[in-house]
Image (tube, rainbow, N blue to C red; front, side, top):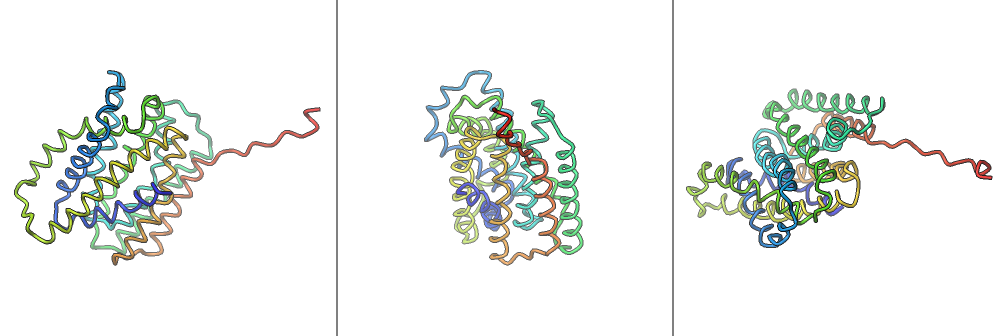
Length: 290
């Protein structure tokens, strides 16, 4: 629940960060600040990684710790934070699909139906948004969907290939491999030329610090811990609650959420539920044991 609250709040934090910084600066600062924080506390944990571990950490790091911070910030220059969170709720669906594709998980007819229902919800959400929110560009929704798939790959990789490592080691290593390219992009974005005397910049900098330390560094440690003690699908299912928290913050901040957008989100979550629903195990007849 703590993780749901923290990650459900990152969308409004990104929105506030974009007031004084560009999307590339927000993404870069988020990664670099989180990396420094993690290195301070988790540097010693890196000794536990083997060469093979670094290969998987590099893949997982770029898919979940490098690309999404930039994609989310870029998407939220065109789409409201609440809608971004609803689109991000496809992570459990993506986690199941990646598990089936790469790790040989069996798929049922119900799961196939769930995938199509989830995709229908995405189409409804985007189509309605394009009709009722002409000031927003819903083509940027595909950045959120791409990021969600990146998270799905990351979850499966951690559970299947890195489960022997501590959550702190996995999180720290994931950011170590992306901090240099993030720093290069940050410098390229003109971060050194920003006027830090500007009140809007100072206002946004506070939200970036909260986003980096709590919404990125600490939240990733908690999430990797959740993956290590549960199933990939259960860990991904925290995204069920993200939209509730994010939509609350969005409405509180003056965003308009239409009923049809909520309806599209419900369809997505129903599809995710179909994909992840387990069959009920029938209790053995008490007489059969006699």
